[in-house]
Image (tube, rainbow, N blue to C red):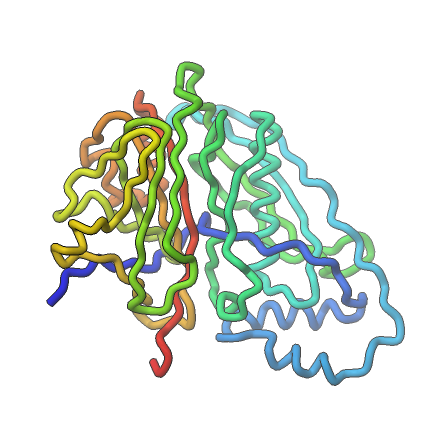
Length: 338
């Protein structure tokens, strides 16, 4: 039997993924139905499909009222966390709800907007993020989508987060036309003496997998580094992919490319395969996350057994290590006939 390292789905209120902002087209009276469809979509495999078919045959509304634009996000800088050494920033954001968006989609967009405001107002930088395609019908049925993958910035990182509010809201006199998020993000500056040019890049052989498909992970780095790979899925659980019993240490040279699994590892019967979680949801959204350090870490630092990936982040931030990170989102679909 061939040895196989599985990509297991875990949940992160991080991975991946804000919906694209679309131009609103619904009328004011339609928004109660919009909200109802969005709420219903959380329990459906492919929500909205039946409604979409009805919409194509339904007569056009007599008049279409413009939905107001969402206001600019705001933030307030708060106290410094004595334990984590980061600064808490409260941020609020609202987004306009489009007719065909699920709650997960608009929540994701509002979360990313609030995070960006918090980072920008404290450090003067924007959050870099990659998103899964929230328009995929299969993803709309998930109750806990990965909202946004926060990547390394040159000046700081969000290392803790608490959501105080996320719900539908009114925009002007348009009832339930918006979605509001209020959160507290704890942001820590990168040390002044940190190597600002230490950057890593992570990519997958593809971002849409069918169950049992094999994956190849590719990493690049601007510095010689030791690598730690994690699979973070849709329930906040975190699995350590590398190091493992077959690859006890992963190293990369500056300017070169590191591949996992490489030819030698595959010849030993080791490969990475996509697998849906228990319960077999219609689709799983996950994130591969990468941490790179200039010195090898002890297991107590990189082991996600306690605290998951966020726990790893906090331990690294409390250390004197110079490190960089990156992330890539992907989805897993069931094989036909299953």
